[in-house]
Image: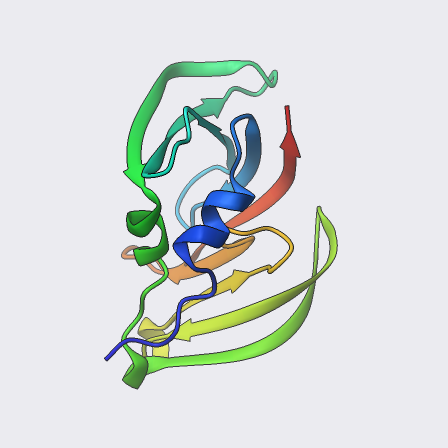
Length: 149
């Protein structure tokens, strides 16, 4: 059995209209931080295409844009975690977005646990997530901006 997801597929669909653009700060435990962008487009009743690219040091796109089509149910399933190893609590976190009310999902046990912060005001992906790195330390990804373009 899985813990309840933070959003339904319908809530994700309503919160991810064409043009929603999310910029993320990715901080790998064993490497240099970088920024990644996710932009939603061509949304319909079934799903959406998400364009992803990395930003270079100058803020311009670096490399190719990767486009992935997903159903709304597939996006919802990304936050489907086994109930027996998932703890959900409410937490206020301070992010580049400001002070954000979140649902904090701690998934796993001990040093292998990952943590995901989902913000009801920002349906879809977590506004921050942390997971143990295979090389030691913690990989962290944080939403820096979330805008409609």
